[in-house]
Image (cartoon, rainbow, N blue to C red):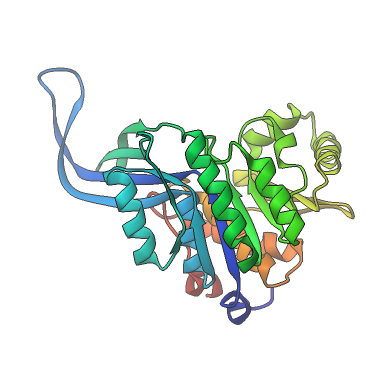
Length: 311
């Protein structure tokens, strides 16, 4: 591989739109079982909040050296305020919409004992129509300032009108990269790239019998949606890219897997920053595969830096 194109990456301006989350971690020690129920008692020693979902994609983009703007919906609550604070601290441009209709910011709270996750509690509620109207208006106002649009879909509601967002980008000639969710892939028609994981691909096209069958199904889906490229992330099996010219594959990086939380966000961010520099899809996949191999060795929702990718 050629050296990481940091200088070109630093000129890239990427708009991330999608479902915003706050990942909250409570770290502690477990040395006894509760007398009230057969569950461990965690004595919390440290607390940490991290950006999650689309916000983690933006955080990774900045860590990789590019400029990121973040557009999504948060609630008028403590978690939403913390997302804004963490975004500013990370150097992300805050374009967030606040839902005044009582929406709760999506919050995933994880309790860990001795670095092992014991419990996760989720708080979530979809945005209202007024917030989605404001999101549409914000996108129209700032999209032209960016080189590329990234859509991070976690099925929490922010991309409920994703067809409009893709149409707006196409009208301005801004390429769109999508991390999908669910099985209704027609929603993503007209994007440049869609990046399902193995499970998401099965939701979209059904179970395949072998690699030839997967290639046929993937290419049919790519043509049906009018995509330049379809990239499947396949965990220990690496990544497979489907283009009009055919199929290309890279094996997974040989790293110890500690935590896969947010790995897809890192892969999407790396694809975005490298594509924004003009690299071909195969080179982008190689860099994304390398970044994914690094981030799964870290605890929780994490980032990969330009320095780590270059070393």
